[in-house]
Picture 1: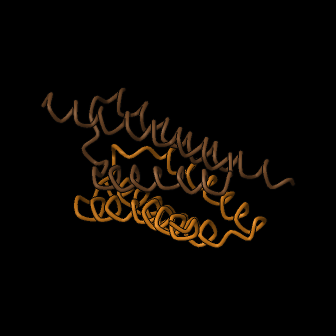
Picture 2 (picture 1 turned 120 degrees about the vertical axis):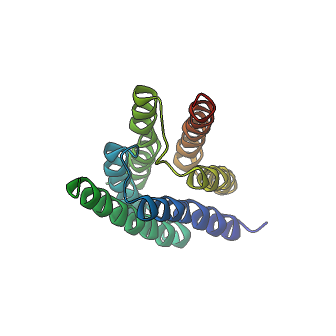
Length: 86
Length: 86
């Protein structure tokens, strides 16, 4: 298979993996078992992947990691919100 | 900065992000709020990233995604175990 296609599918899967987590959080209005440290480290890592993608002009990496970082950011904000509402 | 260094730091961060989640799970002996669908999709995606890295001979991608897939696998097994113990 063409490498770009594998990269795009891989990126779409890893990016979209945060969507069910987001849905679960919104449904249950809590995310106590989700590690905040994980989210913070992941956010920093995703940001650096975007930078890496820009340097290599690797579009699957740039686009998918940007989307992941966005999802990750929303999850962090929601977790903060649910913790405050307790 | 050299692109390989950015890639390695990015990969180490995204790979290691699952470690605090693992620690939190083991400490609390539960992971009810962690989405199983997320873990499954993430596992498939990480596997494809490894494949993509092999095709591009991109070592930061191969090594870090292999490690992430391993962490992800352990988290899935632990989640299954804690659910059964209920």
